[in-house]
Length: 191
Length: 143
Image 1: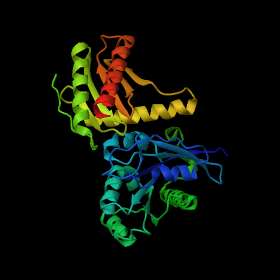
Image 2 (image 1 turned 180 degrees about the vertical axis):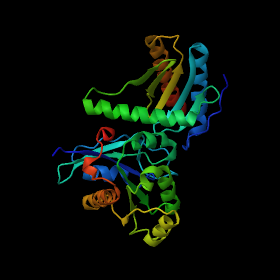
Image 3 (image 1 turned 90 degrees about the vertical axis):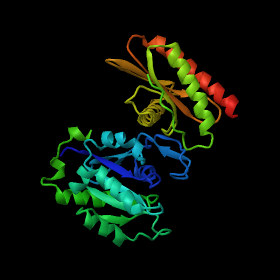
Image 4 (image 1 turned 120 degrees about the horizontal axis):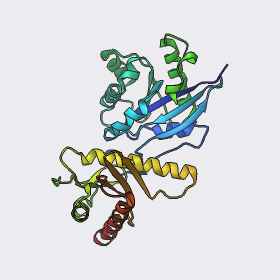
């Protein structure tokens, strides 16, 4: 049986941990495009991604996941479209310490609507230990209002197991909703 | 050509820096009629100064330059070819050159858009010189 490659996207607000998550699970040295951050009002951190992150994970089956991280800020939405092309699924990360995490999630759900509506997304809520509000219930209510089915997990993307769990849940979600076995899916568009 | 007033980057030195850069961009465009647009941006894609035709967004070009250069730098590092000096796009009806502005304190980027009546070699020289001059001015006027 030939081994397959799947392209997965990591999206979410600036500082949500997309670069960290990919670096945490990648088996190759991750490609990152971090530059000095001048937008301290947007998020007080030293660097920010402006093009993409890239990493790879091999599944037990031998299939390979190609992980693409997007820049968080909406001024880079042209990169969202470029990187979203051919993606099988998406991990959307939310930073619960930001002023309005529910609005953040809604923005990314809308921007990646095609993937989300195809039930090919999983949502990871971060920094819930220090910022328990909004609760997971509030996020569930938002998804229900928007009529979106996507698994929702509280995660710490610095933990490899948490990121692998997100990928596992995402893969399960995709398998459940794809009409055909994903291992028979097209691969050219995933390159 | 209209001069579009720049919106300051979210950075305390915004105003002085924008004025310095705007002056240099105007001088570049006036000296080289083939150059039809130019933008100075922060490394993370905020515009500092711009001279563009109506219809072009300095904010969008700044973000795109940031992505282009960041990706090119990652690719240079990945392949071991050394420091990325500039990124060039040659298209049907024009060229784009993107370079780092060398200066001590902050990473800044220069994007220049020109028509195809000039060769790439003839374009690179004034663009690099303009970047070097902006860098020197930023070093002296902003410390």
